[in-house]
Length: 112
Length: 109
Image 1: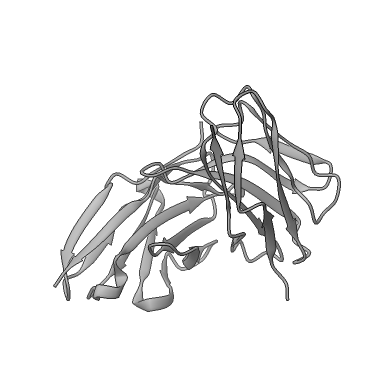
Image 2: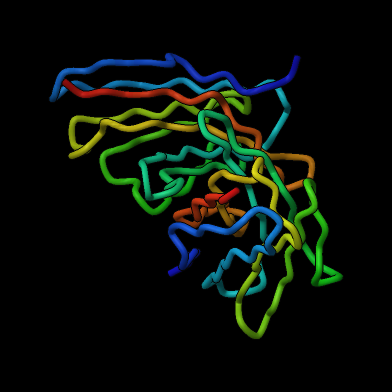
């Protein structure tokens, strides 16, 4: 079945550690996105990529990094520079000209 | 800077009443426009979208939205709200898919 897989679902990290969240899709979508969802703030765009080997900063890119070496994969690294990393992270993709975003189930990161 | 604004954080309506949720955007040109709904504990579901053409678009679950270029708005409407419509609603805009902060809808019996 086609879809987006995010892993891990839950992750605990100590302060000062980097952590990488995985996002893989088998929908053959060109565009992929990372969002952070906090209560009352909606989905805030971290990074997006519309083609392999290219990505753009969103509204809250500071303290995060991404790569897009393969069409299927768009991992997000939460670095120690991110001041408030505890959050729910959503990955999404879109393609085929429909505009509809397909979302993963999310990864909940807790910094201890 | 590009932005999406949903002015109403929380709206309460009675079951059977009409509903309008507001969305305003600031983009250089007319962007793609979307409305998504997220029920408690669930993922996001696309309600409707606007790319071009007729400015009144129909979506699922009886929702519709109207694009008004002069007001940079894309407001979501439903003539008669059902209790199951209680959820959070998000407007999204553009190829970069920026979302508004969301409007939480409560439905009174």
